[in-house]
Image 1 (spheres, helix red, strand yellow):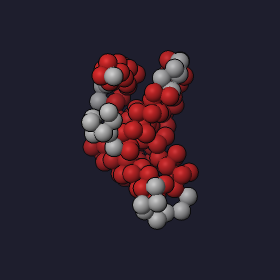
Image 2 (cartoon, rainbow, N blue to C red; image 1 turned 180 degrees about the vertical axis):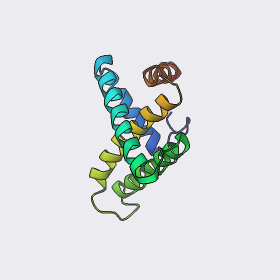
Image 3 (tube, rainbow, N blue to C red; image 1 turned 60 degrees about the horizontal axis):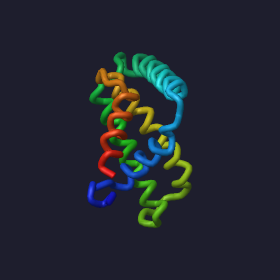
Image 4 (cartoon, rainbow, N blue to C red; image 1 turned 90 degrees about the vertical axis):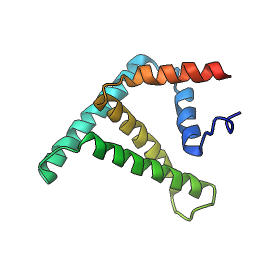
Length: 128
């Protein structure tokens, strides 16, 4: 069934993460969101020091896409399709970082990430 919906390894891993953690309390997810946004503020401060301006949402999106590509490379390495040492540790880190980027991008786009994930899960679960 997953092949029918065109899930890639990246999408499967992200979906598995959210399904596995969907029982996470809203309080925990709220803390993760708050920590993510606070960390992004610290990066904005660094950007101001180094570049004189904060990254735009377009630059944030490009950084997210770059990290998503690195997830793909690490998954390829895990499957012995790309030569790379220590891919499992980096894959774990990049999965977390991508979720962080998604929280940041949602906030900058005016989207409630909790509602977006819940709506996605509800709609997708109905397909099965």
